[in-house]
Structure formats: C-alpha cells, structure tokens
Length: 441
Image (tube, rainbow, N blue to C red; front, side, top):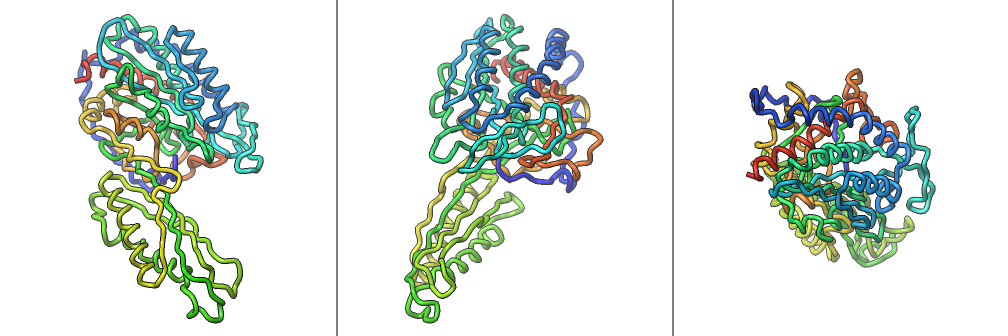
C-alpha cells in the first residue's frame, strides 16, 4: 500500500553475495515437497487470473472470501469466515505438537480502471467516493491470494508430518477500509487472529512489479515505512483583504508552518541512519480574493523507517505548528493521525537471518537480493509488531521488460508475469517447514 518507488530503475538494488546457506543434504524442500509445489503451480496461475478478472474493494471481498473458504474447507482445515468483515482464517493442525506459524495474504483490489489487453482483464465497476469507477488488482493481491491457497494445499498434504500449526490469514482491506469503517490487519489483530493458538512467527510476501519475475527481495529491520496522515487546523481572525492588519492571517501563518515542517527531515534527523518523509498534500482556506479567512486546513503524510524516528517527527510537527502559530497570533489544532496510522513494517533481524537460506533455496542461486527500504506502507506491520515477522517481495516483472519501463503499482497498466508464482509457493512452504522444523528456535 501507499507510495511506491523506482529503486530498481534507479539502480538502488543491492545484490546479495552468493550464500552457501543450503549445503548439500540440508535443503528444506525435499523431493516430495518439491513435487507437491510443482503440481499446484498451474492451479495457482488459474486462481490468480480468476481473482484478477473479478476484483473486489476492501471490506467487500465477498466472492473472493467465498472462494478461499471453500478451498480451505476442501483441504480439511478449520475455517472461520467474516473475520474483520470479510477475512478468512484457516487453521491446519499438524500431526505433531510444535510452534504456530501465520501466513498472510491480502485480498482487496483498488478503484483503478484496467488498461491491460488481457483475456482475464477486469471489467468490474463499482461506486467509490460517490462516483462510478473501475476495480482492478493493481497491486498484486490477486497473486498473493493464489499463492497462499497453493501453499495451503501443499502443507495440508504434509499435515501428518508437520510439527506444529499453521494459520492462513486471508486479509481484507490492506489498501485501507472505506471511509467510516475499520478493517485490515489492524482489525484482524484486535479480533484475535494471532491468538488461540498463539502465533510464534508470521510471514508474508508482496509482488514487486519492478523486480524480475521469480526473484525475491528482502531486508532485515525496517523494510517499509510507517504511515501517518495528519491535519493541522490554523485559526486566525477573519478580516477584509484590503485591511489584513485588522485580523490574523491563517494563510500566511500556514505558509510559515509548511516551510518550517521541511526542516524536520533536513535539519533534525540523522539521514545517514534513517530516511523519513514529511509531505504536505493539501492546503485549503478561504473563498474569495478579498477576504482573509478565519481558518486554513493543512493535510499531509509522515513516513519513517524507524519507530523512534516516527515518534520524534510527530512531536516536531506538533511543536513547529504550535510555536509558529503562536508567534503570528494564531492558534492550531494538530491531529496525528487524522484517519490512518500504520507502524513500520519491521523484519525481525534474527528471524530474517535464519530464513535467508530458505528464500535462496526457493528463488534459486543468484535470485535473492538484499533491497533498499521503501517509503511505502504495508499493514502486515500490525502483525509483525506483535510477533516476529518476515515480509519479502516476489518479482513480477517479465524478464524481457526493463525496470524503467515496467508499469508501477496502483496504475492502470500494472501487470504481473504470473509464470513464476510457484517461487512464492515454495518460499511460503519452505519458511513454514523451516520454522516448525526448528521448533521455532
């Protein structure tokens, strides 16, 4: 979710050196498991294309959830529906006691009209924000759902050999719930999906349209940024535009606040240690050219890759807005967050280090990359702040397409090469088997 970057196109990917982390005889995926993963690949592609053709917006994933629940029930899992509105949770209890692993996939599409010339292109429309719009899986969530359905099928076939339990979390509204509603991972977590039985570790993946199909990207620590929107309401004293000295001008005051906010990142943060963003997205006040209004509203977004830096920025925004307004005779009200607040998507460093060999095994030698952090946001963070988590990316860019020409996420031309989705299945299965097989150590 949130803003995306062109890091790959800009050459900001870090190539991870060869890891002889899976020496002979230590592979997580044995011949039986490899065969099961290979057998499900064609159905994963079929499922993905079905979901792509019939996308649904957040908290409205009714048909998607129905398809997922039917599949999990057919595998003999304990299934709960209606979680956080339309979420589905499947529980697979292994043949032996052991840790509990959660695997998550997000299900929602976006209010985007698709432009791709595909036989399974979305033709769906809906009403969003009071206007009719197209609906499209413009961020790869269709692939996430299909991959996790495939992983569930493989792991269910290995049920008797599993030393532990797997929870499959099919999550609605990752892109945010409709206005006035709750949803997403935040609501799922508050409803207790990480409890009964208690989850020991959580894993998730996300398609990356700029990374070559079948390749995997990862990063320990802060991988995707926190995201908090904010609103600053500046109140002055209304006056005639010809006599501004008769009032207190909230527009001029807002201009000074906006300029001062830019010094938070440039002058208060150690940018060599942690990047951050403070963006003003809208400023609104007044109705006529010759009236100084009484109020102005400033709204924007704050992104940070470190939880402590995130709190520091919040405090600096409040302090700057308040002090600047006071100096000009105005008052302010600062709301952080205004409507949304996502934590940093944080990959537990120890868990990540242990699972790097598994990711390399799934992707193949030379196809695993240590990548730069992203200032986009992802609500898997609500799970990984409660339990150790690992969130990684799976490439979806066709090999014959250059990164700089690939359509970005959240655009009408977004496209996923689904020929290598089996790598995602192998990764999710491998991570599960590796964690359960080590008793969570």
